[in-house]
Length: 165
Image (tube, rainbow, N blue to C red; front, top):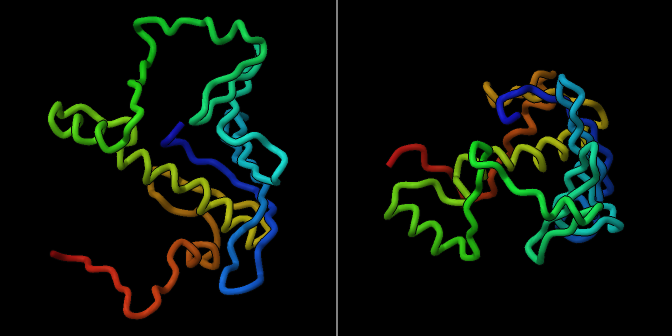
């Protein structure tokens, strides 16, 4: 699903006191062409972590553990031909192990880069108060220039990006 375009709608409330204007609560829906929906929400009412909802129940996972309804879903065994993720309780040690073994770490930089889309795009959709479309292959918004300009913000002095080394 990482390379499939999707649409985002989001509503948010913002902190407008002091020197910050970031979201304090949001409710976003990412919709894929096949109808799959990812709900990205934090209104102070949800449990932390990720909840995966399927036709046989749900599984929720966070750093503290894993839960399911029905609990029998926790007994499902991943088949040898299915994708297996390795376990990493220490990201630093996992990274060093990956450097030595040349195998991908549990938190790969490319995956982390792609994961930032969700928060950034939800914020843009909420600030614009309209649905936006994202093309992950092009890493581009399929909308008016107003939204595209929000993908980058000016940096405060003395900060700058060095584009060559």
